[in-house]
Amino acid sequence: MRTDTIFYQLFLTFKPLLFELLGEPIANAEYYQFTSREIKEKAFRFDGIFIPDREDKPIYFVEVQFQNKSDFYWEFIAEINLYLNQYKPVQDWKAVALFAQRHFEVTSLTLYQQDLMNSGRIIPIYLDEVRSDSIGVGLIQLILAQESQAPVLVQQLLQRAKTEIVDPLVTHDIIDLLETVLVSKFAQLSREEIQSMFLLSDIKQTRVYQEAKQEGRQEGRQEGLQEGRQEGEIHLLIRQLSRRFGKISDRRVQVINSLTLEQLDDLGEALLDFGELADLDNWLGLRIGE
Image (cartoon, helix red, strand yellow):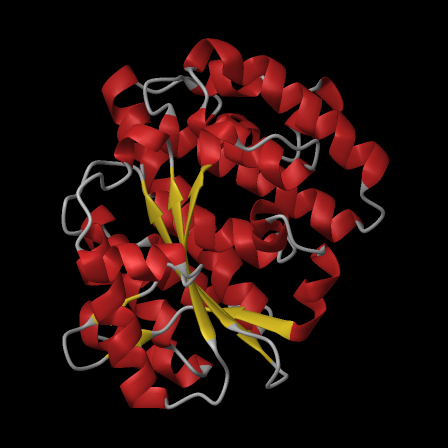
């Protein structure tokens, strides 16, 4: 599962979520812009950066880790130092490491790394130990959940979104996130199984319902798995592009729909560096040969 892409969309939808995880006032999110940037020297890319619009607020560099990696902190620190050298920000900084579970934490630290940890410069957070009733944390719990737990979690989150969220666009974003997590995390589920996790009134808003309605038949199991993953990637990419540049034209959507899974993964990495729609057009023209 592409947890970095999903967490990017999660923070994009719920910007206060980071400060909730840190135990800080969620009002601090008002001073930040969430983004992701590539460090050109060695092509490092952060999972996310919260950049403040005030000099008295720190920059938060965010990395998500869902596996054991002994050199995780060395790479994280290297990315930060390259960023500081390249962009030369005036603000202070902190590094937030989001581990799926505590046992993914690096256990053997150098004195330098330990000093950064003791000073509060590096902040590890173990997502399975976070206790909160917010919808954002609920989505994280779904990412960490077993398949047997998913149906109850999905229905709880849907019900809360409809009762607690005023903006219908945000509610739609939550449905998108729920479906993206299910398609990415539980690739073995059929369309019917994914549909069964949504309340009846919400099924018609999901991609899997629209796909089944248009096709009028259930496709073969293996083909369905491949299509489900590909369409999940396409939908997430278009949502990210739309949030940054507004409505994406039908022609651009058509070209994106024609991409292979490998090309979609490449586009998911590249779009984080796009500054305008012309960058997307250049990328699609280069890759598709138009």
